[in-house]
Every structure is written in C-alpha cells, then in structure tokens.
Image 1 (cartoon, helix red, strand yellow):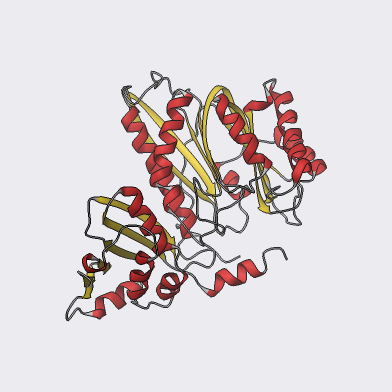
Image 2: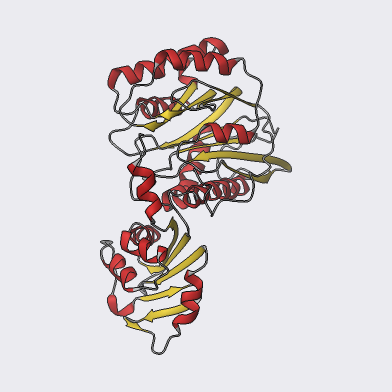
Length: 407
C-alpha cells in the first residue's frame, strides 16, 4: 500500500524504557509475509491504566482488558494483527484466555496481569493453534526495536507510528515511548484503535488512570477519520517505576503536572499520526472552535464539522465552501447563534456575525487549501468554551481501500 503523503520522513528515535522488553513473531493470522504478533514483557510491579471503546459490540479482548485494568498491575502485553476477534462469542473469549494463561505460566504471574489486543477483520474467531504457536515463538524471540513493534501491530496503516516525550519529576528525568496503529474506523468514543505508551516513571495506578483520562479527552477523543468507532479501540499506559523517582500518588505530588503534560503531549502526537494515515488521506485538517458554552460543547461542534462528508470532500477538492461548515455547526445539536458565527480558513476570515466578510479575498484561501495542512477556525461568539479537533479529507482512496478490505 502506498505510503501516506502526510507521513513523517522517518520513524522517530524512541528511547528504551527500563523494565520493557519488546519481541515480535509470526502467528500467520493472514496470508502475509510479515510478523503479526507483538509481545511486550513488563517488569514486576508495573502499573497500568487504560481506556477502551464504548462500542457495545466490543471484542473479548476489550472486556478482559477492562477487568485487568481494574487490578492496576501488568506483566505483559500481546497484540495480534490481522484478526480483531470481535463478534466471535465464546470461541473468541477462549482464545484470549488461552493466550493470557500461556503467557502467565511463562512469567509465573496471575493471568489478570496479561493484556491482549487484536485488530483486523471482524467476525472471524482468532485461531487458537496459530495464537498458541505465535505466542510460543514470541516468548523466545530476540528483543526487537520500537519500529519493528510498531510495524507488527499495523493492518491498513501505511507507516509505522511512534512518539516520545519526557518530564522532570522531583529532579529525576522520566521517559515515555509510545506506538499506535490506526488508519480507518476512527472516531474514538474514548480512544483510538490500538495504542500503547510505556514509561519508566513510578506512579500509582489510580493516578495514572486519572492522568490518562485527562490526556485522552484532549487527544484521542479529538480525532476522527470516518465517523466510525471500532469494536477494538484500546489505549494502555504502562509505568514500570524503574526511573527511581518518588512515586506519584496524587496531582499534588512533585512532578505530577510535568508528567501530565508529557503524557498529554505523547497522546496528542500519536493521535495526530493516526489522522495523518487516514485511509486515502491527502490533507491533515485542524479545526479550532472558540466561543462555545463549554469545552465539551466546542469539541462536539468541532467533531460535527470533522465528520461531515461534505466538508471533508470540499477540502479534498480544495474548495473554500464555508457554507458546509455553517451546516455542520448547525447540525451539531449544540448551542449556536447564526448571527454571531464567524469562520476562517488559515489566517483569512471568510464569515463574521452571520454574514460573508465583505470584499474578502479568496486568493489566500485557495492557496491555503492547496497545501497539506489545513486550518479551519470557528467562533461561536457565545462564551469561553474552546476545543481543537483533527481530521483528514475524504478521497476516492478511502472507498478503494474499504471496498477491497477483506480481499
């Protein structure tokens, strides 16, 4: 598959995280010549936090992940690519429990500390024999790089995605490294496809969960490619505690604000990479909404615009049809006043107070829309709520990819 034109020039240099060992193997879930099973072994005592899809047809992996997160500790992560194992009933759950038991026996730990994710075609039970052999191969494989792990969790992605951040906590520098996969079926109602962040920071699980929830609301919950929320969406954060910092127990702990900022930063980087690999995407779109009655209301307005096929196809066609933005604001179901609404493309305001800006020059707008990075500004003129969301354009490529997805 052709690499997205919005892809970074290269995979970033991610620092190793003490207490994390990555390995990959070939389970051969599909007829492809590549690794499709990722194994991350974690130090004893690693804290875990997670957010998962609100899709009611979620996979057994998601259900068991939620149960595991409630325990707050993790020893390993297994990610299967090529088969989502969703909508597969008891057979799907048995396959996940088999993997959990197999890894738990290897590590001599409770099965509840083993986390499993799967991504790919819906409705096909994960083959137990292939899973068993793939896991066995992964457990004894040579350690691999972040890029290899990121490539292994891909499905329709056109490039491997990774990001890093760091923070100073009480005089100790802590590192964060993360990988993510996602390209289509992206309209998170909590998270986005499959994403994993690893840090050497020492943090109590309850605080880590609070921090992830905060970061999620400003990153993964602010992206969309096509308006569809996956059955498998999962984002997990693992904190090994190997940095040696004084463990964070509350937001009042020294360094907590710095770590929160770093976690939000890496989540935002990863979320934006998913949009930049949106199926068929040619343009990355940032929509900034101000003047809403609340931040949440602003986010909903932004997502209404971002999910509009008419807005997305106009951007694909480099058409400054701001009337479609007006439409999307009005259908959002959020407070809005037509006669206070303002709209801009790039640095050019095209509408204000419910009217087109008299005599505005469309030339700079046309020039802006020819670029790869598009900015749309919407001011509702009501109160102080604001939010930024990210999406991509909608092209013929999206149809081609999804029409042939199972073939």
